[in-house]
Amino acid sequence: MRAMILETPRQPLRLVDLHVPRPDPTQVLVKVAACAVCRTDLHVVDGELPNPKLPLVPGHEIVGAIVEKGAHVERFKVGDRVGIPWLGWTCGECEFCRSGRENLCERARFTGYTLDGGYAEFAVADERFCFPIPKDYPDAEAAPLLCAGLIGYRSLAKAGAAKRLGIYGFGAAAHIVAQVARFQGREIFAFTRRGDWAAQQFARSLGAVWAGDSEASPPVLLDAAIIFAPVGSLVPLALKAVARGGTVVCGGIHMSDLPPFPYDLLWQERTLCSVANLTRHDGEEFFSIAPRVPVRTTVQTFPLAEANEALTRLRTGKLQGAAVLMP
Ligand SMILES: [Zn+2]
Ligand SMILES: [Zn+2]
Image (cartoon, rainbow, N blue to C red; front, side, top):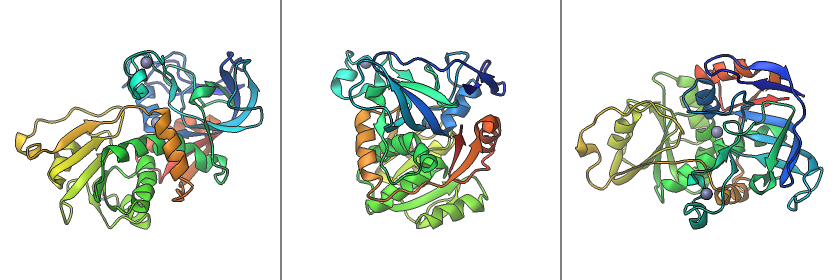
C-alpha cells in the first residue's frame, strides 16, 4: 500500500510502498477513504511532541470501510464504515481508566503518534476505540469530526454553561465547535490572527456575533474562552477577556510558553485549564449531537501524495476549515 511516512522529525514526509498491516484479534483493517490533517500532526512532524513512533504513518482523523477483522472483533462487521480517532488504546486498569478519565491513561497509545495512522491506503485500529460514522456525512466531511470535532467538543464541555463564548484561533476545531455552541444557544466571539479578515468573515458566516483580532477586547466580557491556537501569549489575553468566575480552556496538545502575567488576571475565581485527548464517552456524545445540529464541515481535499502541501498550508494559516487527504 502507499503511505506517507515520517522518518525524521522536521523533515518532509516521504511517499513509500508498505505491506498492508495485519489486524490483531481485537483490531479491524480499514481501507482509508479520508484522513483529515490536524494541527497535532504538525506538532508531531515538527518534532514538538516527544518520542513519536518512527518511522510513523501520521494521521488520526480516519474514515474508511472495514475490509477485514480480527477473530475477537464483535462490534463491527466487514463493510461497516468507521472512524478512527486519536485515542487508539488505553490500559483499562489504571486509576484514570477506572474513573472515566481514560484520556489521562499513562499507558495510552495514540493514532498517528505512537501507533501508525491514516496517511495511507489502509490502517488497523482496535475496534473498541472506533466509532460508527453517522450516515449523512460523506467521507471527507466526516473526517474532521474525529479530532477537531471530538476534542473541540471536550473543550466546549470544559467551558461549562458559558453563554458568551470566546474562541481563539478559528480553524478546523473552532468551525465545528461554533456550530455546536450556537445550537446550544451560546453566543460566539471569534478571535483570529491580526488582520485575518478571511477567517473573521468565515467565523461570522458560521454565526459568530463578533469577530476580531486576538489582541482586541470583545465588546462585552465573556463567560469562557477556548484557545485552539498553539500560542501561549493568548492566555493572558483570554483571561483579560473573561468576566469574574470565567474559564479559559487551552484546547491544543502543544502551546508555546506562557508569558508571566499579573495574578490579577486569574483573581476573582477565573479558571485556567487544558484539555487532553478524548474519552470514548466524549465521542459517543459528540456523534449523537453532530447530526442533530447538524454540524457541517468545510474541507479542502488533497491527494495522499500532497500531504506535505496540506501541512504547509495549515502551518501558514492558508486553509479555511480542515484539510483532508483522500488516499
Ligand atoms: Zn489506563
Ligand atoms: Zn487532532
